[in-house]
Image 1 (cartoon, one colour):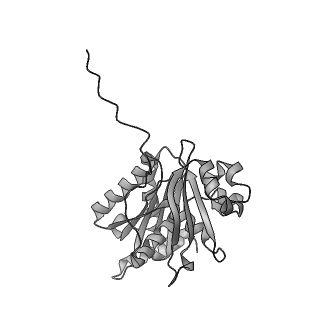
Image 2: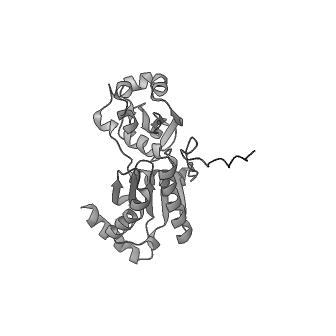
Image 3: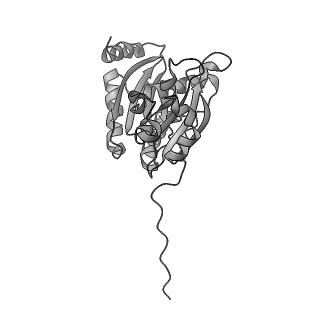
Amino acid sequence: MSADDLGRSRSASYSGSVREPLILCIDTSDGAAVGLLCGDDPLGTERSADARRHTETLTPMVKSVLHTAGVTTRDLTGIAVGTGPAPFTGLRVGLVTATTMGRALGIAVHGVCSLDALGYAALSGAGPAAEVLVLTDARRREVYWAHYRDAALDDGPAPFDVHTLGGPGVDTPAAVAARFADLIGDGGVVGRGAAMYPDLFGAAAAPAALEAVLDPIVLGRIATARLTTGGDLSTAPRYLRRPDIHTAPGRKRAS
């Protein structure tokens, strides 16, 4: 069944009295990505790789995903939004859009670290004791990083989640490479931040891992799992450093 067919079949359930959770998933940490999750079923996704036009692209993408699934904003039961880390302007667009919609619709907004979604996707189906280092572009010749292991390796039932071993943080590529030399040597690195510095990170990594992008559906599934486990769902942005634009100082007094 195609995503469009699944969307139409699922949308029919919203005419009844019992509804599955319908989660809108938004991330603007790297371009813009939008997804729709009904229970455990993805109803569609859209992505824009443009890292400078979040404001222009995000709302049309949300409308398109909802329209394709045959639902409206009033059918939504929650919103999952990526909290970065990412540069200030792009990340703020996604967070403001999500929180504004949540307030207008009277539904909860759940925040998930964007690197968590990349980490889970990389670890899904990995072998025992697998770990991964996620790297994304932080500009200023730096990378955002986080170190994960599969939450299924922890005690108790395995949620759709990751266990954070370190980060998120921001640092120079050389400093990150020195800190995680063994993991990088084993090919345990993922993300386009690594692809930008192949001499430091790319020797043992699979090309597909270096080009990995965030799946907004994974973001929504992690948020859903944390509603049960009590994991962190704060919508506080992870800027990790001051924005590039600062308020200009006041005029000097003439002598």
